[in-house]
Figure 1 (cartoon, rainbow, N blue to C red):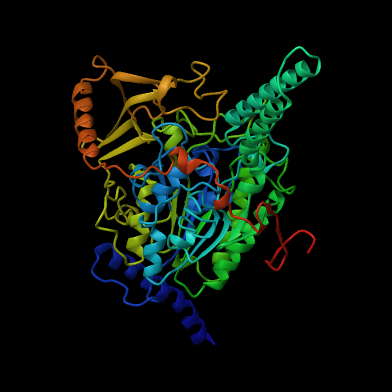
Figure 2 (figure 1 turned 180 degrees about the vertical axis):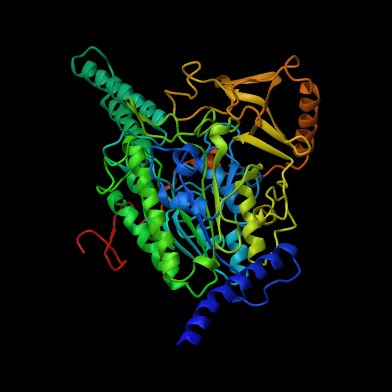
Length: 598
């Protein structure tokens, strides 16, 4: 019996030694897995939505309870200068999935719309883009996405699914093809194109009043006009009304849906059930693929407004509904991590946690804050230059391989995850295109002291707002701002009264000369440097300017996915369960969609 016990104790040690050997092997590129079931890690990528870096205990918050995420950081590697490639959902996620700036795939806007607005738009992640899921699928991984997609669905017809996750390397999808918005909650004010919607409703009322006035004038004999003209005007008004109300009048039904693979399972989705459904799906996926290797991208709906929170967490935090939602998110992540451990996968799973961008400062309900806290960093969601819009949590966990408790302050990017997981899977990044990310394997393991990024470029839409230079020999991290948003009210730190700050136009300030900060001394970007206060001012501005010019040479024109024609709602592209336009279904406990009345 003692011999059996010794063998039992030796087995985990031997397995851990094999994992370490494999990791060093991948790092040094001296070997490569030869079969689909070789010793490659399972990969669990967890992305929160709109979470501020200051919302987590491991990043300094002592009033919100996030024990599971904090433990993940304590047992793994925590990055403190981890940066989103864009400050909004759709472009940030496009960059994350492809390892390259979103404007290289047309998933950014020069003006106007900065994210996809409809499931039935024709824009989305182009078919010729390569995601990390596609490469890992080719390497023999099972690849699953559970949660938010927000990269488009169809191109030309309802069933072509050209932008769908299953057309981008995932072999299983369950979740929202779009994103949560206030429109998903009938008790909330409208969000999708709310200003345009109000304008169209105003035009409709004005025209209706005009037609009623003409009709009344004709009836009273004040106006000489034929009945056909009045009828024609009324018909035109009706057509105008239908042309916009058919989309804006049913935003919840068109956008707030759940899909399993290509099938719509909930239309509209029942918000109160969504968290439990996502958890059930994630745990089930892990159990189905525990013999691995698998990639699971858990793209959380937390903590985006409308902050749907189950009763178990309501009123439990010190920070209102937003805090409740953060603490529920941490609980949900804990359940996922428990599933990994319960299935014996903890030591063979590479886990990563982040947010797609900074917290949403302008999200408010009266005096209540509905968006996240970005700690000491200025700005938030929608601001491509200020740190608060792009600095996000970055936690990596792989017991026995990555050193526990390690903290890295080097500049890194969400785009680095693409080459990192590709390397761990034994694959190669595409050589036929610009890849902006760099593998983090050497940095995480400690083989390299510095990030591979000397320069990072920070965009708001297609407009370069700032650039960062990591001067490795001195340790300085210089940040040059060419354009910044105008806060409203002045000095408020956000653009209250509008959804997010603009990237261009009258709402921004172009700085000539640029603003300069040294983030190593002033991470809050509170004290801009001048030639008088910084002897290297002109040299730094010139060096960063040269890097920007070199960077611009890598840009090339591509079709714009956020053009007006791509953004518009198109009924023939609308995902639908049932017969369009009578789209409605809800999922039974066995996962079968049920139509009303059946």
